[in-house]
Amino acid sequence: MVTLIGHAADTRTPTTTSWLIGGATAGLCLSLAVIVALMSHRPGARFVPHSLVAAGLGSLVAAALHPRPWVLATVLLGLLTLVWTEAFVRHARLGEPFIEDDVLT
Image (tube, rainbow, N blue to C red; front, side, top):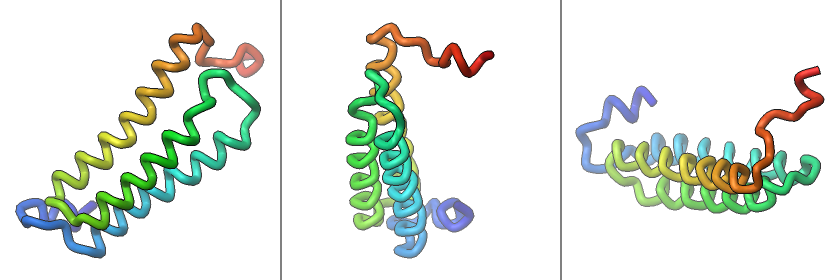
């Protein structure tokens, strides 16, 4: 992040920074996709692994393109926001509680 901020005025994100941040975001998304896929079945979470894989692939594409630093950060933030917004809306439409009853006891 320091390098991303340090090169904020550049026309392209440095290659190593782009791959580090984009790859880390992709790794996060793919790891979460595996974890969610291995969890017990939840009606609102059916498509979450697919959304996370798509966001991970989008992160790698963004890293490969080396856009301006602020564009890279915005794209990565947008991808993660889309995944969690989609999951939230899907879960809310089902009317499912967000906290398990047995967790509180």
